[in-house]
Length: 309
Image (cartoon, rainbow, N blue to C red; front, side, top):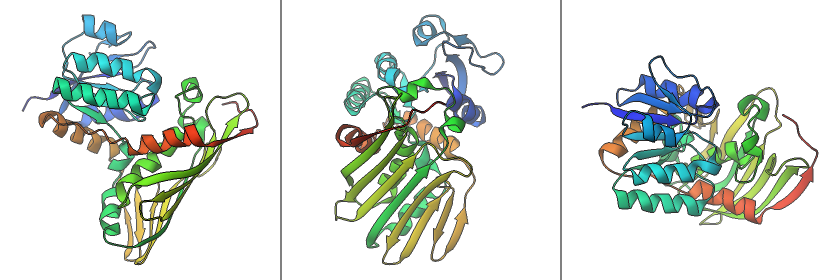
């Protein structure tokens, strides 16, 4: 079966760290072009274009598009590609808001092409074993702690502090994508507290109180100011003991023992994208995004000190 011709638009840190290596290692895809207003280093022989319109006008034909741009412009670009019959992968968060992505999902269905909201953390090795272990168990409470250093993971990315850039929810949504996958019932937001620096439009820290459909309490603590060792943990207390997912889903601890998994998130993500394309299916789960949007709309804003990165 011939590889799927794919282009990448948005050649920033996540594209260079994850998307381009995963595509290069995949037998399902071949990279034919990239686009970004900046220099954006691409493999030898792969042409570079300034933006998606110039790629569509002057570039080689391609079947699929990975959108790694800031979310504020992702909806417009995805709409243009879908209308041309191109399959689209949306880096997380999948767009500027939930309504925009719902519109894209409808458009993809009408055009008969694939739309994939790519929650990469769901492809961490421990996530599916955790989901299976929790099946049929009675949950008592859930605690999420997701703290990292924004200077390490998002250096100089001004868009992330602007409206619809999500701030600390950019990494925090990863934990919610895991929680909404492994927990047996849907989550809803009870209350939220958002710390917003005096010189920013998006939060640098957030504390959420949620419940599942059976009333089980779920707390989430997100912070972008942690230095040193980073914390990406989810702890679930059940009638069968405590489950702990740590290192963002790379380590699983349950009463029966501990398992460690290699980092295969993006290779697994692209394998899933290929399956979706060949089956003419879409995968657009908006549950994590809806929780973040609720927190941003309903949360109590607490001003905090100006922050420079």
